[in-house]
Each structure stands twice: as C-alpha cells, then as structure tokens.
Image 1 (cartoon, rainbow, N blue to C red):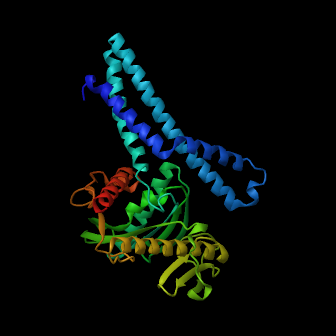
Image 2 (cartoon, rainbow, N blue to C red):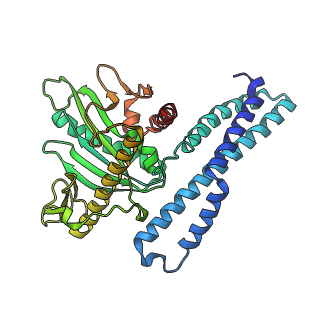
Image 3 (tube, one colour):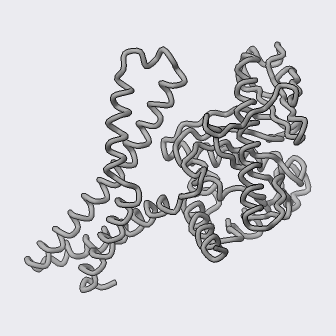
Length: 371
C-alpha cells in the first residue's frame, strides 16, 4: 500500500467502523452503562452477592466495549489529521507513521467487526466449557490440562472472569476432565467455535523411549442458562451421588464427602463438581452445568431439525477441528478454516484470537451458504 492509497484506506476504515457502531448500537450500550452504574452504586447491592457480581461483570464488559470503540474512533480521527498535516508540510516521516498506524487499525477494526457476526439466539450468553481427555492415555490427560490452561490464559488476557467448577485429575498426570465458566457476555458465541476434537502430536514426555505420540481431547462449549429458558429438571429425573474430592487441593480435600455427581436419568448426562468446599455449593454449580448441557442439547436438536439432519449431540472423536503439532515440525492448524501458525507455544499461552475470529467468520459463511 503506497502513501497515495492512504486517504482511500482511511475512508474504507471509517465506513467499516461506522457500520460496527451501528450494528453494536453504541448509543444503546451507553444507556446500558448508565443503568448499570446506577445499579452498581445502590447501597444495598452487596446484600445479594450473586446479583452484585453479575451487575459489576456486565458493567465491566459494557464499559470495555464502549472504550474499545471510542479508542478506535479517536485513533482513526488522529490518523486522518496527522496525514493531512504531514501532506501539507511534506513530512515523509509522519506519512510513514500514518501507514504503520493504518495497518494496526485495520487489524483492530477487523477484530471488532467479528463481534457483529455473533447474532445467534444464544451468542450473547456467558459460556460453560467442558474439556475431557480422549484417546492417548496419559498424553491425552496432559493435553486436556494444556487446553484448560490455554483457555484460562485467553480469558485472563482479555480480563474475563472465570470460575472452575470441576477438575478431575488423572492418575499419572494431567486431567480426565475439567469444567469452567467464562462469565462475560458473548462468551458462548465467541468460544462456541472451539467445540470439537483437538489433536496433539509430539514426542511424549511420558515415554522413556522418546516415541512420537498422537493424543486427543474434546472441547464442549455450552450457553449459560437464564431464567427465561424454562429448563426444568424434575427431582425424580436426577440421581445425586456424593463422594470425596480427589487431586491437589487444600486441607478440606479428601476429608469430607463434598464432591457431587449428578446423573440425568433420561439422557444419561453426568456432571460432577468438586472444587468448592461445601457440598451444597458443589451441587448448585453442578446443577448449573447440567442445565447448560441440556440447553445446548436442545439447541443442537432444534438446529438439526431445522436443517433436516440428525445430529449427534454427544460429539465424536471423528469431529477433529484443530491439530497441534510439536514434532517433527511446529504448527497449529485449524482443519476447517485453514488458519495456522508456526508458534504453538503462543497458542498454548492463550493467544488464540486469530483462530477464534477465523472460526466465527467460517461459521457465518457456512450458515449463509446453507441458508
């Protein structure tokens, strides 16, 4: 891109940003922020801790969205002003600076544009994410733990609050399964493209002969249930088992029967929660996860019915969506979008936004092609 193209580039970015501001309804977001700020300043807010945390979480998210768009608008305006001044004064150095800023702005506005593609019925919900080790023995359990860290680091990078409901440790290393919530609006719409089977190829650190090992882990993303969803679960349809927690933990772990396992008898869905000290807290968390699983099952069944297809809502190991190769070369590649990188360490450290954005765009294109 030459300096002669900069004015046209600025106009194109301005048009894209205006479209984003209209779709996300910046004025409505500002009104929401004012309402939430009023609720957050209420003297009796913390009488109900769950509601207080919800209000503060939503306020933080809405304020962050507004700040992102306002900063982008300011940067774009500043770039246009700097270009005009640089051209008037023949300042080649400033023109180069504008070019560098345009590249950064293009990437940042493109990232924000992805949010406008999240228009599904449940996309605006918070998310519950379940990870389970698949084929591959101890390597698969280790891989499941690597994925848990990857998603928690991703959330941490964005300042998204998370709550881990369950971590079931494997005997030698890693995790059999883990379940956690990402408590921010649009977490489901954003992370739902991560659902599927993830595949790891590496020299196994658990093989004393140093052989290459392929292992698998499954990721399931579910929308958090809200009061309007009518996911009623009769008590006679649930079997409740309590047992002692296992794995690393504080002094209360392994000393009381605080862990809870819920089995939904009609569907066979099993949910466990053991990360809280109280059996009641674990049961409440497990019930939230069970409701989320049933809502996602319902969503998938409705989607399959509309498409005239029978869909396996339990997931299958044939549904591979991403490969992480550490040997004989280093590459992470999404098998749906062709998005790839030669830096697996950054991916495992939570830098997965490019993969998520590519997945959201791919899903939208697939939906448009099918519709």
